[in-house]
Image (cartoon, rainbow, N blue to C red; front, side, top):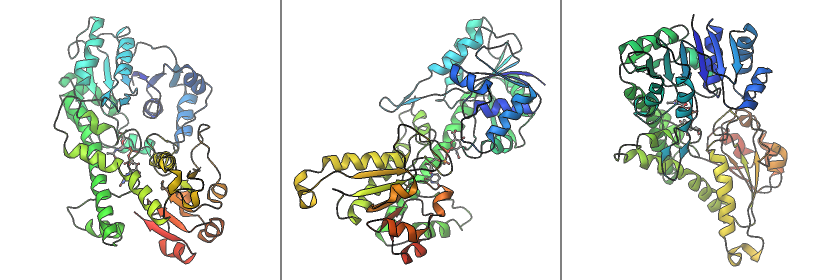
Length: 430
Ligand code: SAJ
């Protein structure tokens, strides 16, 4: 069993720290956010991730996990800090990684290992992190091990995936790779794949998310084409996927979260070759416009209309609103309405669109979230933007009675279209 210091206690670092602690390692969880440290020290775990609260509590109670605002010398340092992306310049902010490296180098000893788990542009481990760590006077690969080991956990299923997913381990040399394998082998039940090139490991992580983003873009484009032929895109995709070498993803209102909409751009940090990849990004980003066009054309204009958006989380059954398609649609609807000149609004009346938001998983004081009943009362249209399980249980007849209009745009195709039509609703699915 080893001593481990996990730097960054977010949605990857915290479960990783708890996992290692629950497998008997002596773990220090460190974060620069003093409020977060205090919350965790007092057992408050605020992330809405299935099973996480009990899992972290178990680790804290065992005393194998201690949360501190001080770094300790440790055999392993794992970095799981954010790498924010600037959409204007299309560059990643690596300052959190540099800061973590700066802290670690002050405690680094010969024989220690430093593992970077954060998602980064290719080359970051060697070009950005290594020089900072070597300020310690120690040499990467010689005196200490340096490894990129990308996290691959799916929000909503983190604890299971942390244990069961395969891992890619890319050390800067063989000795580094072996040191990391020893640690991950203690809890990973999936296969561990190794490469002795950290940059390859960084690249692999990015192309996994790029594959998914590009595949979803194809599904989104096909859904729009299918709509023009009056075909059910989901049925067509399901049938196409019966072929042993076809695996199309599902269309929707766009791609949200903090990985798929961003990671493909990391590939472009030092390459001009992103052609299909950037087009796929544009296709996915344009889905919010497409949803609005569907609402607008089926309501004969937006001016003066009331629209309920069901789902501001970026995907089903999570509470995370980062790059949420639902929120983007809500904001765009309001902006579109603001641009409608008064002269073209029907009867010269109020040109603004009233947008109401509902989400059973999200608690966000900055958003005016309403109960399902309030959000849908007297609206002209309902747009379902997130595949929360709760939305599959909506009573269509009660909804139809509450709404003023009858339009439902179900961007995730989660409701029973035929039953909802029988309840008097006009359901359009993407
Ligand atoms: N989505 C679709 N159609 C699909 C699947 C997803 O429109 O068929 C949308 C979702 O609704 C959501 C977005 O894509 O808005 C992203 O959701 P996701 O479930 O595909 O992925 P994330 O961002 O929650 O997690 C991804 C995962 N990557 C892969 O599956 C390759 C996860 O394993 C990574 O660990 C995570 O990114 C990460 O941290 O990089």
